[in-house]
Length: 185
Image 1: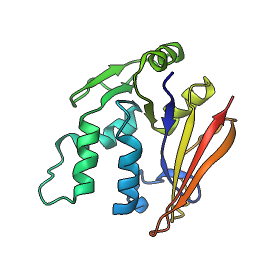
Image 2: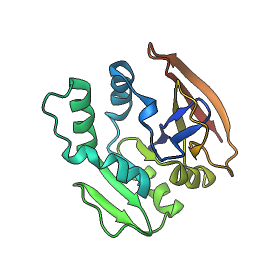
Image 3: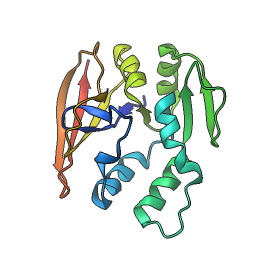
Image 4: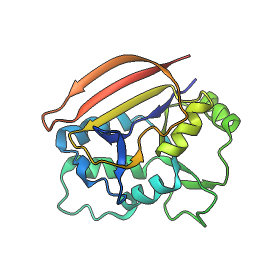
């Protein structure tokens, strides 16, 4: 059975976006971005909430002229994955290999995990919390950026309780820390 993986970048105080909705403080450099590329390369399906999709869809048409190799590689990884966007308010999707679902149905995700040939990614804290509450998330790869933003969108909103096992930790030269936890059932 495929695993469902949540791999957000968060500030040290636990936010994926600050109170203005910005996340530019995360500043993944080449080393961090390459690590994230390696994590996402084998994943063939990504599940997104509306807001996360709206941020990431920029990768669809990003001008890659004069971009470093690790940026080009991430764009190619993103463009070559199937994307399922869960939103009741989004009218349509504007990227290739993307479908829109109006409701998050845990049973549908369980079936997807059972039939998928590769592990799956889930992005966006609100969608990830729904999946965690349904017992669907298997691994959490948390990237803690060296920033305190003081408020905004929490990486793990209230309402989630999980027992975790630390599998791996890694520090990067730019101060980012990667914590890989397995969810215990």
